[in-house]
Image 1 (cartoon, rainbow, N blue to C red):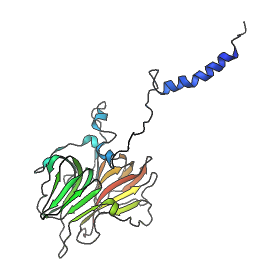
Image 2: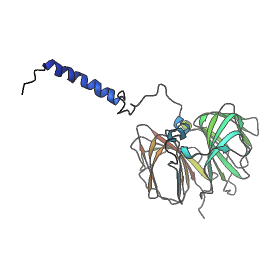
Image 3: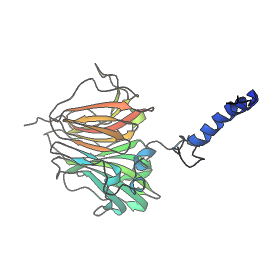
Amino acid sequence: MPISKTPISIYLLHALLLPSVLLKCALGEEGFCSAPLPQKDSKPQPLYWKVTNPTLSPTNLQDLPGFTRSVYRRDHALITPESHVFSPIPDWINTLGAYLITPAMGSHFVMFLAKMQENSKSALPPQDVERFLFVIQGSVILSNGSATSHRLLVDSYAYLPANFDHSVECHKSATLVVFERRYFNLENQVPEHIVGSTDMQPLLETPGEIFELRKLLPTSAPYDFNIHIMDFQPGEYLNVKEVHYNQHGLLLLEGQGIYRLGDSWYPLQAGDAIWMAPFVPQWYAALGKTRSRYLLYKDVNRNPL
């Protein structure tokens, strides 16, 4: 057998070219190994942008007919964006709503998304029903029966007591998350109309926990529910595995994580909503590389009897 006399310079050339060939393969230039490299956003997106632009939007699921991450059980539900059904909200003008939680599930409150279009306007809730609204996209004008009005931007909110005359108007477009429930009246206890923003609320102590907590409503007796904003850094989680008589309605505003509900474990991303019935075991851990933030409804200050 003759001995190959290929010059060593040829081997060196091959060694230099090999990395570029592998790089082309990784970039998909040869027709395979075509997973795209992650792209950085050219500009930062607005706060809570992922709620209205989720990763798994309906257009991303066109090749998976029938697929949804939404789940409904006796004591909990996960409602994900690809299964939202928007339709006109009764008596609202130029507004579409998606009801995420209603008493048909077993809840004593309603939670829905309201997409307000150009020149839109809200209607009043039913008699004796209180309302809480939180802006997640755009801006709206809140007016009461007097000449007072407030411009609510993203991360702003308002509590409207039962039978409180008010209206919400939008000149361009906005998305709200709205909670409504029949007020549980206590004698000589009258809640007040409240307008605020998340960043104006102080961080509260959470003994034994490491997440950050803000409460958007007063903790006093006139209020029969509260809204919490809870922030977790990646890797942080609830220390307590909660089981209690309170109900919850949750909307993940930022980030991603995993939620335990009963015996099931659900991956979550911004835009996902959860209903938790009384006494369902519940636990959350934040995953990913960015802050995880959720908005949480909780009934308070009333005897369960």
